[in-house]
Amino acid sequence: MNALPQENGDYFALDPLKPLELERGERLLYRLTEFGRILWEVGIDVGPRKMLDLAETLNYVDITNKEDFYTTLKCSLLAKHEQEAVFDQMYLYYWYMRNQIGKKKADAPGAAKRDEKQMRLPPSERKRLAEHLNAPQEQRKDLRPEMRDSERRRRADERSDEEMEDDTSTPQGLAYSAIEALRKKDFESFTWDEVQDAKKLMAEMRWHLGMRPTRRKRPARRGSYPDMRRIVRRNLKYGAELLELTWRETKFKPRPLVIICDISGSMSLYSRLLLHFIHTISNGLLNVEAFVFGTRLTRITRQLRKRDVDDAVRDVSKSVQDWSGGTRIGDALHFFNQKWAKRVLGRGAVVLIISDGWDRGDASTLEVEMDRLQHSCHRLIWLNPLLGSPDYRPLTIGMKTALPYIDNFLPAHNLDSLINLGNLLATIDDSRPARNAVARRKAVAAWSKGYSSQRNYHVPGQPQELPS
Picture 1 (tube, rainbow, N blue to C red):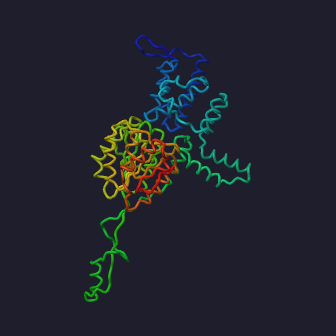
Picture 2 (cartoon, one colour):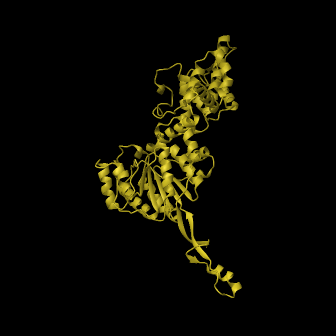
Picture 3 (cartoon, rainbow, N blue to C red):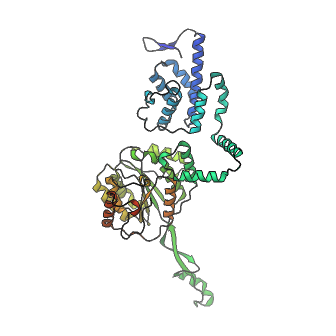
């Protein structure tokens, strides 16, 4: 740990250390081990091998230099760039909380760019770490075995204590109220624990898509079409007299579903949870094609075939090059219509676009591609997370341009809105909604100017109103 540079740039250990220096070195090794355990608990793969390599590496680094110390820890313990934000947050939390409380967290290297989007730590984890860090040195070693208790056991103990204090409490009612509150809460204000609960609720959702009639027929007791082959075979025993009749009916299959999700910077607060939602639909329905776009379109159907949702989202983040970048909805839809529309929009497909409507591309391109996409699919549904706000108005050019060609305009800001979407998908039948782009442009103009609200947004020939 204690090293000085030579003229040639090498480092060498000094003579035998003093007792005070040995004590400081042991304290630093203990804190490094404790920091590695914290990283392991939040999901970063830190094992004994990496900690030993880190201890060897620090012999060649000036640990009094904060930037060199941070860079050494980051290079030794971090293997995936997707976890860089988590590492920076835990570095700030562990190494700066006691010494620089009240100061700006931007003093740490690499934290300035992420100051506005810091990770929300679980309240229980934050409390546990604070108690552990503020404990005396002799008590801290005794706390280490207790630090690995699971959060589920801790919650169960707290809930049992509350029930013993209040005999009139009903756990079923409390759980139901918590789920109801979670379903109505906006994704943007979720804490870390609530995000995990929302993922579990999404995994339990069951999806059903409207059926479409096919050209094929199947045998039936009562049908509209005579089954001539079976009629002939059954009546051979009667000397070819037609005494028994058999029938066929139209065969139905679920419609294909195509999902196109916006992952640009304006959707960063929702994109992760919406990818979990897309993974749930992809594993719950047949014939689902998934795409994401920012400035370009990327097909992610193959990545979402993995059963583990975290592995699937990790593969998606690796394959997408424009994550949290700009938005060009018109160019992305143009590429989709040119390359993928003929492959995935057959057999009465339903198209689901998830975006907030912020677009930096050409509005005329977006209008042409939306018109073409609407005529190529059976139903065009647009989910906008901002629509959950009661005072929302389509003020952006992209949203104004796209609205006249949308069959259903729905919010996607909480779990209840996703449940409403599932109910709508289950009721889609063979009929198409009335499509009158001229009338819709007038309705959109009145809505954007504030002459009408989203509840009163109505188009002639379209009986459905927008939910608030």
